[in-house]
Image (cartoon, helix red, strand yellow):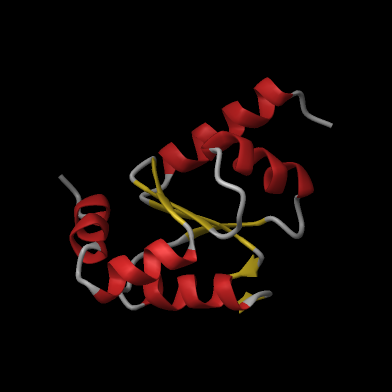
Length: 110
């Protein structure tokens, strides 16, 4: 079992090491809840690599990421190291065109 400091450090490293990170229930190929599925579907529409952490397989990550963001629900999406939000926020941003520029900026090589 990891200490809280180790866990938070690991989450920070994960979200800063990948342009798009989703802490979700299940995997992008097999989401295990409707909110995770809706979030992945929105993100997949941009054809970018998605780093997913399956919180059902890692209960420490599940609780740790909630403390890391002070956000109570899963999924949680990070773009370029920044916490963006959960399913409702991602869906709304996708529908109103706010998500695409964030994704493109995060996944385009400098």
